[in-house]
Figure 1 (cartoon, rainbow, N blue to C red):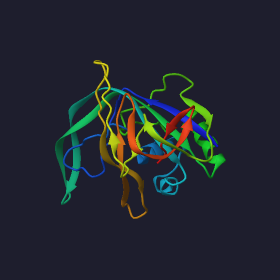
Figure 2 (figure 1 turned 60 degrees about the horizontal axis):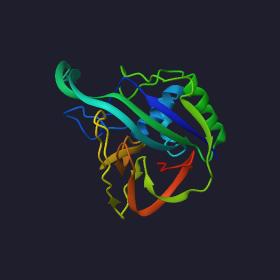
Figure 3 (figure 1 turned 120 degrees about the horizontal axis):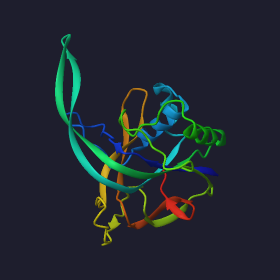
Length: 232
């Protein structure tokens, strides 16, 4: 099965959790809905078209590094009773994030080819969760074409995001370089699709950075260049 490895990086990024309203916080990684949205921008899909692609596109995510996280004050506009009001809220940004995104479309080889072409020649700019945070390719090889087996394998150790399972995690004590932002294993709700009625479906996912996590139970994964990757 053909698949893609997308090296995603930028100067800034901000991926707002869908359940927050009073502050503009950020996930420490791009959720699946954001990644499909980026692909939609590259392909020129309309917002309503994305509903049909959440299940067709399988996504894996690995946090390579984040230099730091900082806060800023931003203005937002709201209209109440025909009056426009300005509110100042706190917004969090990721500074110099670097992710690896794994993409597969098991039931549609034409779709993965189309995605690869449009990531290299997007119709609309690709942004990292914020209209001012543009995607900056490091080089012309930021999208890799790879082949993976159609059938998943079983694995316990991962460097990528995984779905939380009932078995739990064996936490390893690994030294993280002093110059890297430390992201220890943590569980958070990640949106995986928006439905036509605008309701959100989410999963509990375990994320981390630098090093491996070890699960107590094996889960299914696909091998990308010899590395097990969990696909959402």
